[in-house]
Amino acid sequence: MSEEESNQENSEQQSETAPAIDGEFKAVTPADILGGETCPICSTKNLTLREEELEIPFFGNVYVFSMSCSNCKFHKADLECKDQRGPAKYTLDIDCEEDMKIRVIRSSEATIKIPRISDIEPGPAAQGFVTNVEGVFSRVKQRLEHLKESEEDNDVKKKIRNMIKKINRITWGQDKAKLIIEDPSGNSAIISEKVKKGKL
Ligand SMILES: [Zn+2]
Figure 1 (cartoon, rainbow, N blue to C red):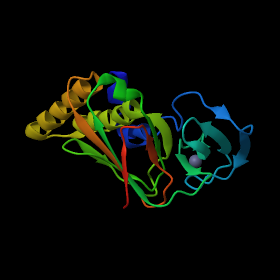
Figure 2: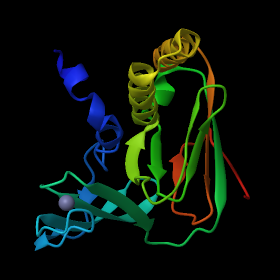
Figure 3: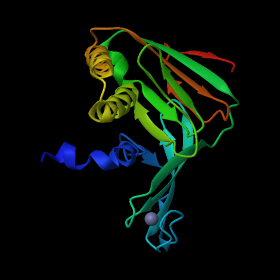
């Protein structure tokens, strides 16, 4: 059995354990780590809380919080901007490989929309993260791969496979796409001169 097959049952959990922070950022304060806390899911004392303040260039300081349980693998990460910005919608037109490097900050309250491909919904199970456009696409791709594995209908499987192919072309700069982030909490952003920022 391949590793992929044996991990199928944990697919949802797995797709949620992508790192909260992709890349190196200057920590404004050393990370505050508190271990041995009670896990809200399995109730054992294996939960580690982590909090740190990072400086994101051309943006500002962001507090990143996370909870991880070594027993049941529960993981939740979220973030909050130091400066309050208000509800906002960011729209980015992606048309070259260089756009993959554009920084994206997403709080768990934000909806990420990639028209004609996939959305990432907010909610209690949603994760906050600091990444770039490529990181957003790799998260979407990972979800689609898991979806494809569990899908029985061949037509749907084929549709998902085509979406994955489209994502690959976009990340190689061979296809265009739109990336939209809407966050009523104002804690998300796409950091680029190309981005259009509007009201929600
Ligand atoms: Zn647990």
